[in-house]
Length: 451
Image (cartoon, rainbow, N blue to C red; front, side):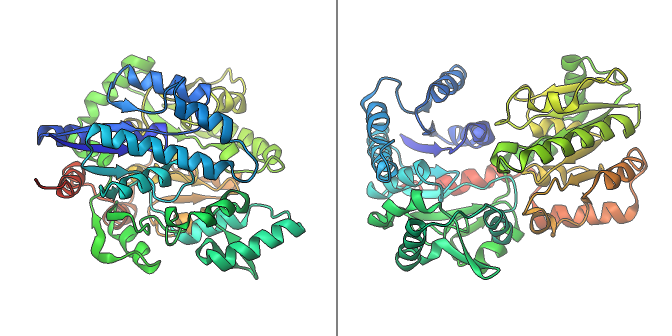
């Protein structure tokens, strides 16, 4: 029996490759899903939740010896991450041996600790690995902007660590505005200088890891971006992102009917979709009070200025706290807002939306599959300009005044110029021919060892 292991580095990636697993099963290739994260109580709650619908999802056992080892040794100062990586490596290696895995398909080849541990385990077993595509374009310049915005607190110890890291693993550092910006935090990376084979060649770009046999990308633009930063063109394949197939294979009217029934929305109402962001993952504690104030003003403007024939649907970020966005909206007697988190995924919501407002979001590419207005609000994201520079059909909104002006055009018939730009973006930044699932399945299947 041929078997594949899909390693996902975050929970919301699990359903994204369900269609690929189903296609592989149709071809006689069985698969399992592996997700490894810090073995906290929340981790085991999530693991139990996903196992209710898929008994082929694997992870640490609540009372297993690997979990005990991580809890005892993983928190040690400095060397803890290195020990945790080795424990995860041993766990993944044992699992893949026991399950008879022929190929590893992973969603990440850069993050310490768990994705790199699993990739290294596959390599130690001579199991070929493929990097799966993600839903957005990853630009190195945008990543540099984000990293450069993180405040640097210098000390004698940190300066010494920086010098050692830049000498032994120079790929971790980039020059920006006269000072070095590091991809990995120095404290986390430092012990891994003793285990350099686990690290990617260039952590600033997806697909550089030597353990990868193949790299799947979502678009021609992503391929060219990767090539500029040293990833071999010969091992990359433009597959597109499988969940984007829904935009060609799903009946929009039927999905809208389901949404109406589920959320009690009038059939003659249009949908104004807001795609939320994860604040604590993007801003420092010092920045948050100002960001909170701007969000309150932003949401109040949307409630006030969006045409009354639109229902406002707030899709909260999967990692955000449930009540986070609700409290920024406050209480509005003039208009109700529908809040969703995991009940509906962003792809089905985007499919039926009549207008979309987002931040620096991975859902940007999905929105290109539609012909509706898409607004991108800056919210002081360091990488905003670098991220949205290639998008010509998404309206960049930097201030509350800009937002208010943009909302006056919501509901108008799209211009031919905007539709032409949308087609250009769709062609350059994604794949929307309905065959992404098939292409990813082809690539995974091609790497399975032949008897």
